[in-house]
Length: 295
Image (cartoon, rainbow, N blue to C red; front, side, top):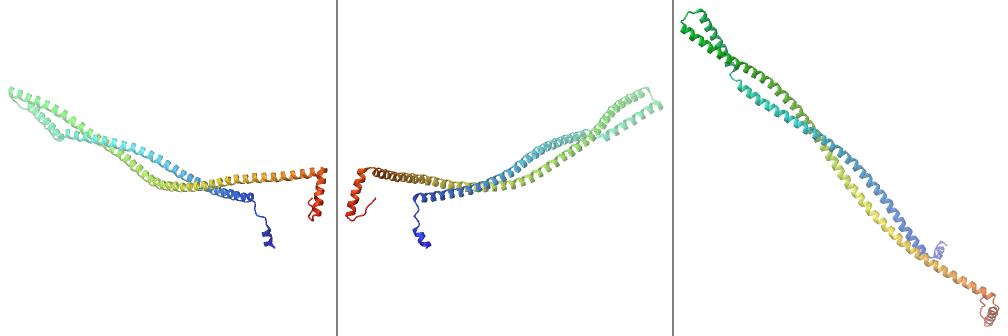
């Protein structure tokens, strides 16, 4: 019975088939658009993730730049202090060179003082001729002048030794401060090395995310192309469907026009006596000839 009903089912019209094809294209387009939206969201999520990684990279880069600037300042200070220390060492060596023989100069002063004292005692305690006394006085004058010169030189030597001691302290202070700056240079260099390693790993991660984002974008573009193709097919089918509907409407209007015209003719015939008489005669002749009467 069911098979008989299926056999008796009316075939689909061209409009129905066009509507079904149009709906299939629309459904496929919507499916592709849904998939494209999902791929777009995944792509955007990956892009946002990459953006966060790049923010970390830029922050590390700024931190490394600040460290490099601080390291450069410490290096300049360290090198300046070392140069100052080297100049002080050179000055110290010059002072020492000038101060050599200080001990011998001290002995010379003592020897001159002893000789002067002995000569003075001799003048006081020894009888001598006027010529010898005059000669001894001249000798004392020479010794005293020489003692003054040697004592002046000895004072200069003492001052030089004091300056050398001060130079030693200044040299030590500058080298100590330079060492502190050097330690800061090393510390900042190590920090930048660690930051560089971290930044390198983040750069790899960012590159990987860029690749994944590009893949998702390409998948998105491909699916959108398929959705656009289905949309174009749907629009083409919609144009065909409209054409079929217009044709069907025109055919229906034509059929209705035939019916209206026929009704009009029948109505006119029903109220026309001549046509009624002619129709009656035609019917009688048809009946007499054994035919069927068509009303």
